[in-house]
Amino acid sequence: VTRLRVRSWRFLPDFLLHSVRITRQARAAPGNMGAEVFRDAGMTFWTKSAWRDEASMAAFVTSGAHKTIMPHLHRWCSEASVLHWEQETARLPFWQDAGRRMQRDGRLIDVKRPSDAHAAGRIPPMKI
Image (cartoon, rainbow, N blue to C red; front, side, top):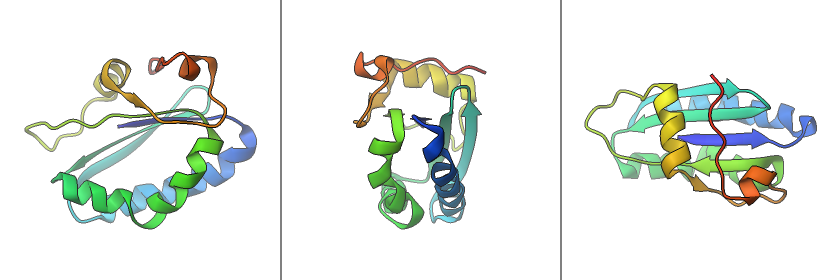
């Protein structure tokens, strides 16, 4: 699960273009068992994906569109967090469950201009 808040409207077109490419890449990647995106309030975007194994996920993260966008996120985003866990089924979690887990166990990713919440180490709740 990832949570990314775009810090300015000027970054939104590039962010959205790359997000579409990454979603396509994820869904076509070997070992992917599901990928979804959710647009939350305040230019915040969530992703969730399920992978057969860590190697499949790592191959996706370090290639293609995903690899291309990663160097830009620290500049485009004011909040960024990630969460990984293992489960028995390939079923993607419900968004509310993913949001609660992110708040509880998520890891912040460094950003160049953090929001007040990010600077304080807080992950805001999902606004469904």
